[in-house]
Image (cartoon, rainbow, N blue to C red):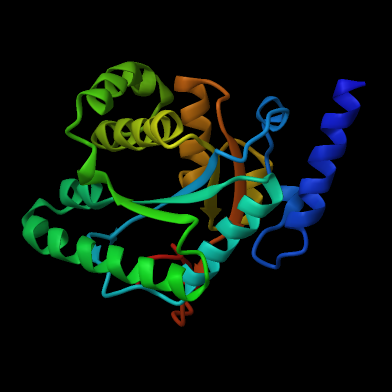
Length: 239
């Protein structure tokens, strides 16, 4: 009986997500255990970067608004109370340390721009944007990072290990400290979602489940678009 009610809730959420052209419901992965609880005090979260191909973003692309609206659609569908947005400034500094000072300024500017967009969309009271640098040096984050030792067994290049450890710790930190239960992710191709391969956010989500367990639900949307015919799709937050 309880399982039937849960299946009905999953079906209702899928139907609600299906009303948005930003999210494809059949590509959505639900953790049914999480959906059995009242989640009014919980949040949906997503992360955005500042670097693509070693180049810093030149601003906030139009695609970001669609990504934020997808998060709001997921928030409403799951019955969550808030949206948490993580800007990965420390990750960008790690990738391009020669631009560390420039990234620090850029991160604050992007953070302010995102907050303005959220306010214009009427999401100001439900939206929180934070920088990774605001908590990466805290004892609680460092303690969680020590639990990612199994990452080396996932078969990724040695130079990517530290980045993956940081990303997975971000997810667990937000779950524990911001009551995040649903993660909005993007993929370049629908085909990635039909299997376990790929090295976009689906890969990170699978890795998180391997290291920290099935503690999150995931909603997937497609990436942003460009005018470059040789690279028609890209991340929805780097211009």
